Length: 441
Image 1 (cartoon, rainbow, N blue to C red):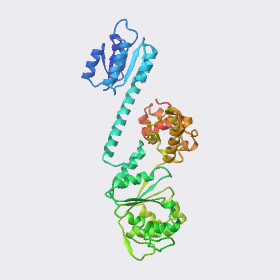
Image 2: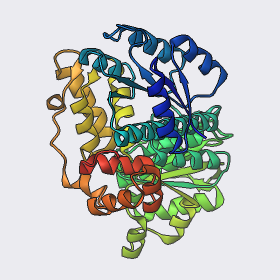
Image 3: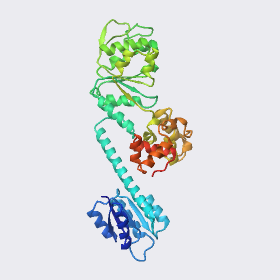
Image 4: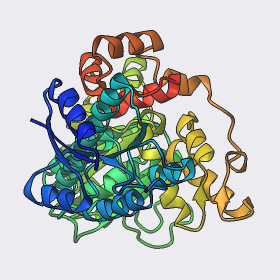
């Protein structure tokens, strides 16, 4: 049973509140002075406090309640406090609400509003506690892992990284898919840094940047004189990565001839340098990445199906930034590095923008804002971004506004219940509520 503490020097009011909340299934304790309140807090686990602002006859300015409130916030910061009085000045109420008071109820109160205020405060406390437990659990999962500086807050990234860490100790080939600029290389870094190969070489190759006629020499090496300009022996990326990890980015751009040579070395670990008949053998863990649809490429004959199965023992799919909006503000603050802050309007625009260039675009926007913004606060007009695009709406239109309102109505305004009914997380539901302009119940 949830316990409420009423702090009020008027005993009839205490008894009235005890009756009102008792009928709703709450256990109500009351104290007629701050001294009694401190004793009650020491003896009981209190879930919420209803606090008067004056405790002595003739006191109407609220100074006593103001002092008590700040003491309560310092000693018991997790307990919601609802202020109640008929005399306190409005300026003081605004100050205390900004300082952390849950709400302000004027006397005489409206029973329905008071009950709703308390119920919502207790739900928010429960959600906050659950979020803290989730964050603690996440910290425990990643406590002894090397995340290579990745910044994230979304459930999608947490689940993706947990899978990457589970795969890291194995030698299985991993294919990382996702749009350009989303951070595929960062996931590859995590895979290598948490593997038994972490103290050996980690070689990265952007296949899209390699000319087709130099691809073989770049990957497998070449003997002196093997081609024009080759004046000395050079080792390829496979040899350089021996005992470690080789990361092939944009592997979908590899030519069919290059795919055949890559397939052989993946199957046998053997290859020859260009211009040499000496067979060499390497031990390399392969991680590949692509932003293209390889299954479509297989169907069109531009990518070998047997190579696809070799590089795709396990696939990690990295969502676009617009599909994990909880990561946007943490990443933006990371890129700003404490040099400037974001205004509320700027934060809202960052969350609502579609981010076609993903994390790379966000980094560029933040760097530009640092250079061009006057003052210490970045405003929405400083970001150089258009307002909400249709792409942003498409990221959320799997559940439309009407469905959202209906779910909240059927759940009696309980967000967690509505989210469960829709099959999404609470955070995802809150994002959609924000997008469609639906106020929290």
